[in-house]
Picture 1 (cartoon, rainbow, N blue to C red):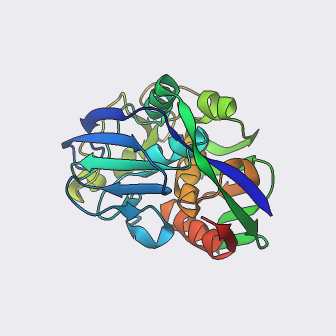
Picture 2 (picture 1 turned 90 degrees about the vertical axis):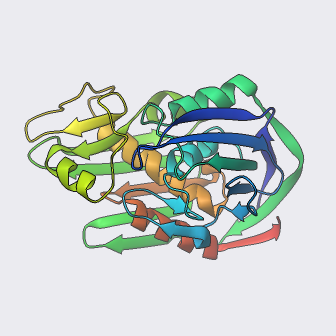
Length: 270
C-alpha cells in the first residue's frame, strides 16, 4: 500500500493565450481544490479529469470537449499537485510557449499546500499497452522515466532516461515544446489543427534539421515524455510512485495506458 498527502496550489493562477489548434484566445484559472483534478467551462458542472472523461486524442488530449489539457496536467503532476479546479473560458487550454514551463513557473510562484487529507492505493501489477512498434509501460516504481522518439532521416532515434524529481522535471522536461513535422504542416492546417502555432511555441522538424531554434538537441523526445506524463496524470497517481517507459507513443496510447493504470489501482481512500 502507498499513502500520499493531497496537495493543491496555495493561491489561484490565471493564464491567457491562444490555443495551438484553434488559434483562439482563452483564459485559464486554476483554483485550489480538494477533489482531485477537475475541469469545466464557466457556469458548467465540474468534470473529474480521468481517462473516462477523455473526449478526443486527435493531435492533443481533450476532456469534456476542452482541448490540449496535457501540458497543464503534466506541469501539475511534475510539481506534485494532486488536487486543483481548472476553469477554461474558451475551447482550448492556451499553448503559451509550447511547453509546460509557464505552468511550472506559475505553480512555483504561488506555491503548494497540503489539503489536510491523504489517499491510499495499491498498484496491482504492470501495465503495458502497445500498437505496432509503439509502447507504453507503467510499473510500480520510484520515478524512473524512459522515452524513445524516432523519425528518419532527421533527427533519427532519440532516447531519454531520467529519475523524476520536481527539480528534474522543471529543468529537463518542462521547457520542451510541442513538435510539428514540416511535411505535415499544410495538412494539419487544412484539418483545423495548428492554427495557433508560431516559431516560438513550436519546434518544426524538416528532413535535414530543425527549422526553428531548439532548446535541447533532443527536444522532441523530451516533449514526448512531457505529454506522456500529462496523460498519465489522469490516473491520479503521483509520478514518484511509478516507473514509466514510452516508446514512439502518442496521446491515444498514453490515455489507454492511463485507463489501464486506473483499472489496476485499488483505492482505500479517495
